[in-house]
Length: 96
Length: 150
Figure: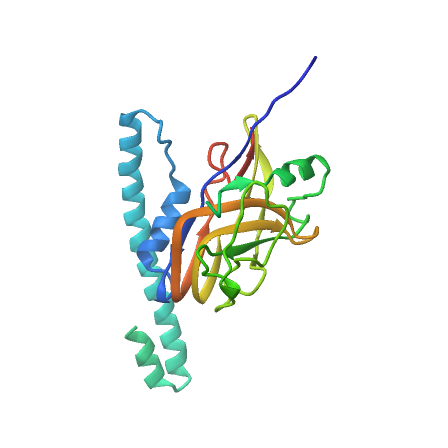
């Protein structure tokens, strides 16, 4: 008799939620770094520790540039709204 | 447990029957959210697991924000291989300005009679209040992809 065996797998998902608004920069940075760096729970301690340190460093960099991206986008929006004559609304958005 | 993570048994059979096509121009797949403990529609509780065969409204969370009955459409990533493992993936999905409490989700084939693919167990209630509810799929590699055949 000839048979071929195979296994099918499914992995857990990560759920992120927020209240009264969208996800925070911290949450988005965490989601990004979880996609970029993954290390097996069964990896040798030295490798796992090094990967986790690298992961934290990547997260800090992502977090920084996420904040910058939000600020720059907001600046562009404020500029556009201000130029259209809605200076009060522009100032409100700038202060968010 | 009322919601247990599993690749649905019927899905495994249907793969052999060619029912599901995960190619980017293939079938449409959706993700619906479910509650336990009477948190869903009509205070029903979802019972989902390997024996689930199709999308059900029992225990599905109520409409809120961008979440509507049946859930959200998933954006497929074309199946690929890594070593001897075949895998497929979906883009992360978000429901915004939503007040949702969900314990799990069902991915199903919206093209073919809402046939079930897999059940996702969040292991605890996840809640958004007038906010964003995001499901992030794992890294698409041979060890972690959401659906893998090794």
